[in-house]
Image (cartoon, rainbow, N blue to C red; front, side, top):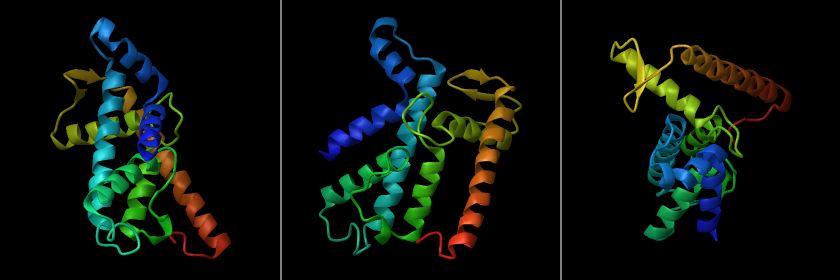
Length: 186
């Protein structure tokens, strides 16, 4: 049943426009830049999340340590898939290592793709930020993906969304920590 949940979560998280393009893909043979970016970033985030969760939690006696290898893989993948959208868990979240919890917070912040059922700053926004940073580090004036140039008008919008979202989260975390008087990570 968890496999069905993962499939539904992924389908709901990649966006209706991407699903529509995938449905029509066989007819016209090509995906838009948006669909390619959303699919690629979603896959990368699932894989990175899975690898990190697997390695951090594999020796945790309260989460994955006592499971057999396939169950560890399955539990790690499920947790990675669900962190950005649905928020379900098969591993007790209160027993996870702080590093895993922080990873889950980052995945929640990124969220799902545009026109999907999930929140966050969106996979495409995050992907464009990473591409922009990589281009800047290489000294390039243009940001490119799949041999196409990203309009320079988009980059300030990406930076604005990320900055405002981070600012709001930081302010609300400080306020909640003060009002609640509890450790916000546990």
